Length: 477
Image (cartoon, rainbow, N blue to C red; front, side, top):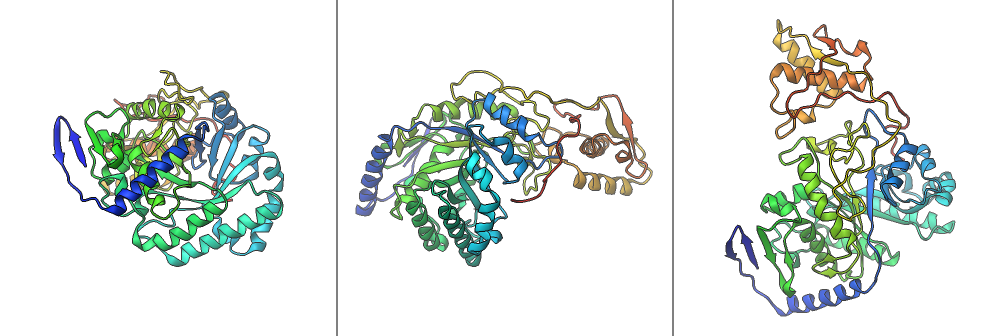
């Protein structure tokens, strides 16, 4: 393997053997088969509602259609959401992350199918995801895997019984189910601790002609594999990784995708399609998470998808992806602050950057959402009373728990604020989450309402939208 980086070459040698040569021939043949299918790729989008200012479902559907999105992944099967998609022509992938307990017996699966029969008929539901990352290496729980597989088979059977064979039940995965420290895609394989269970799962996919679902986040994947940050972008010219069969990788998206292809091939599943159910770039809360980088990332990824160019190991094969995500989710539970900032749109429905969701590469903003009313220009700020600094700090911490302070973390757009400004930022986020209810701007006598915008530099103190639909916030199904 040769890595070219900034004009330098580092020769990393690896031994080849007969098995590797046979495998490379197999993958090459499979790539030809995939390239000959002639199917058009799609650019879809995910949408979640873990935000204080949640967009109304009917407005979201309208926004999807105006932007040419015909495939959407949603994280719920609540009736008010599904109702909005009825006869929209948008194909749905539904994620039920807490759905496994519902389907541990066939009777429970039948009840869910019966309760959702109206929408199974009138919505173009193509897939139901009932679990995420259950095969994650290092966190493997044999009992959890077995229960998830039972639930998956039960729901699939319940759907089949009433004639919905075309709806597949599936799980979604991330890269770290592979063996660590992969230096080239052809070296990829599933981790030994999950390999046996993964083979059983993939046989289920083959039986039902279902795809392998992958969530990938290049801003993390590049660092996870110890690549230079520029390798996260498709217009990278500083790094090129050479693999067998003449395959060359200049970006982490194709590197990760083909690593999955190789891992599947090594368990005799080269016929299984890979669909990317989440790929995105955050705009805050992390070093490199900016609107400019998100714009750069999509400017080169989406035309690649729409052009049906495939990847080095599946040239010409359709790359189906779901852009993650429609809007920021300021109430999303996170281990990393940037997970609240995946949105193409802010939580008030305004686009953050230029992105051509058609994949034609135009330098355009997506369609703006109509019917959104902004609240008055009022902010809740710290009144400057630092008589008891420990009490101020406790109120700051409490406000961050109630609101969202992810933009103030290292690398965030508000990471350079002074202590007083940090307190004001936290107080204001709660104030906006509460739709500017003046009773929420108190914080033990430390806050006041101001009509003067406290925003500074890149740090925006938001004014959110009027109260919208607040139904079914945390319900999982």
